[in-house]
Image: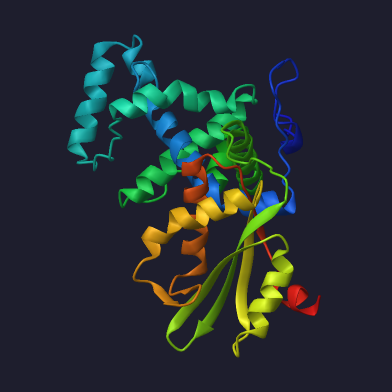
Length: 284
């Protein structure tokens, strides 16, 4: 089998939308925060597909093998007392979302589907306390003798395609941002929440007003000042009891990032996540 080029994951005759596989710097950080939602959805769809009649490891037996072979197989398994692997039980929501979720991978070469399916089976088995049936090397081998590294790259490419199709990588104009600057003190994380049109300057101002050097900083870009204020206002009820003083909260920066993005999505506001280098921001 010829090695598929990860940068050309789509079939040559596919006429639909072909979102790019590559990510820009800001997109890469944003993808890190939202890709798990796509992974969970695709894995559930793959596991649900396997559960459908005449699909999965037992398809050949169910499709016309002589009954005595089925009986013999069952008897041998019982005699060996083979532990039964956990079986995925799809919910009604899983069944309803199966086709829409799989459509996020529409047009990809078949091996990309297989990589995602085997990865879903592997993650489900590990989640149930079983040994890994499909580590990356095995997945690569199952996909035409490819390497484990190829399998990882193919999986990541498929997830990026699905994330773009799902609309979770929206790029917005960088007019205004919700800025977070986090400090590590003896009591734990102290995180400042603010809005600014110049996030780098906001980080510098936060440093100037604190005896402690900031450890992390980032901005969630939104279309304008009004949207930034709406997001912060929507977050305030959930931050009650966590405020230390002024605009500082006793919240881990990663948790603050999740809350900002959740608020933006709930309000229907487009956003782009970007890390800010603390050193370069302070040197500016």
